Image (cartoon, rainbow, N blue to C red; front, side):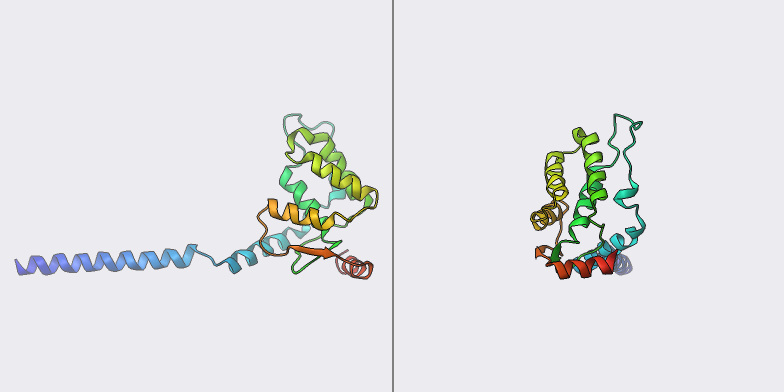
Length: 173
């Protein structure tokens, strides 16, 4: 009888140790801190640096009418990366040059697929202002799209002055 109690106790103790050890292993393996998640996201964005520029994306009239040529998240990403040339923010990862050609190409893509984009009117309004040389909305656009995509680091705080923008362009393009 005593031997059965000792054996049962030993088995329960081993099971408890395995459970506690497994719990801590899972916590260490799968739970990242906010800082680690932000760093991982930044590295993913940097790795996407070789992604085609907006100017390389053309309107394809033969594309299927059942799918947009470019998904909405990508449109948002391009707009967001274009604002980096104009806005001051603590952290900025990635950039797409805000050229008339890039603005025009995005407008063409959005107009072609506007029925598929939830915020098509907003994108077209923004791009129309940029096309006219009015970039006063760049901070608002940056932060709006940043918020739509769950941004936590790098909120835009203001517009760059001409000298700061030129330095940004020189460093990135």
